[in-house]
Length: 148
Ligand code: RB5
Image 1 (spheres, rainbow, N blue to C red):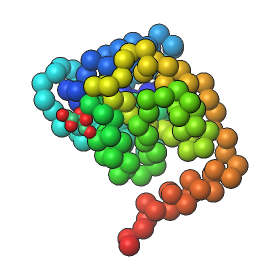
Image 2: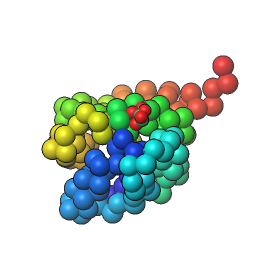
Image 3: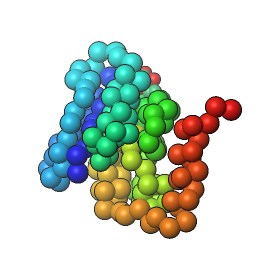
Image 4: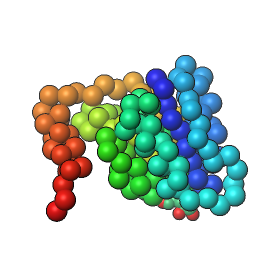
């Protein structure tokens, strides 16, 4: 998979770990930064990763901030993005099976590296179930054109 990866200062350390985990599993990783613990704004990194996922340039996005929440809120503003904050492997499997999630957001201030690895492993080894779930996702995609 081609995976775009980004973080703010609160996610920087975990991002560094996640990048090596993903590369060791054979994935192509594009790391968009940040590359230090100096304070930055997480929407800037969410934007870059979300645009790559929405355009098809990336198969998957991974974003890390302090909680994973701000990254998810920001990424979900972009067309074609289904971002979910994950901290639990079973929830990661459900996000794939039912929601066809294409961006994972992680909590750099709350997740141990091994927990993040477990979430990624669960997500990456689970298939989208399609079927009735696609009808629901199509409805969500329709909201992208909603003016009301
Ligand atoms: C940065 O202090 C923090 O607000 C950010 O990393 C993230 O947790 C936002 O949701």
